[in-house]
Image (cartoon, each protein chain N blue to C red):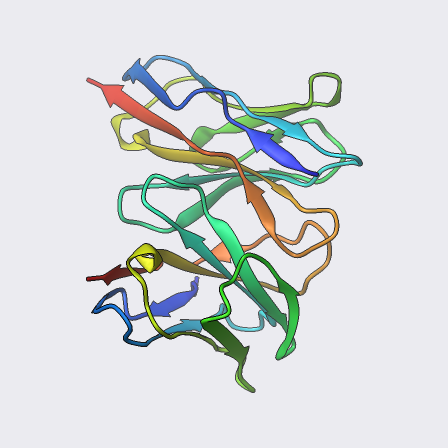
Length: 114
Length: 113
């Protein structure tokens, strides 16, 4: 079965640079979620999109922005990168945003900021 | 506010032994509960979920979990652990007001031969 695809899988950036992470949801899934998992931490919700509109916002820094495109893929744009942004970034998708809808996670993008 | 607590940071078991990973939640209504597993360097794979109905939920890889409202618990169990079960296990609850999942801090399972 098709899964969530994230690219790139690994990314190394320097401080103050920008990064773009991409997420391709499972086919026919219209809802995308982004999470950040710091080293040894649990995943923290950043932002979500439903039918190409932002549906919810969590602890996402103002330096980050995201959008969902007409083909339902999503991109997380990160600017003025800081050392503390080094983390594993997960994208998840679901077939709708009903309460309790299962979120299917991608393999993650590991970002290292030097 | 909703929250999830996983009291055990690290658990070590022998292969073939039984396993129980604890999860307690704080939630104002009927919770949506999930268990995910994360192998090193990998994404989160759903093991099982509880929405309503039968309080004993069967999942993949031989795992099961039991929802106990009176104890606010959703413990994960497996009767016989395999070496490939070594991973990080996260319990999560669906937030009542938003789209997000609220995760516990995880339990790292180590399996000895």
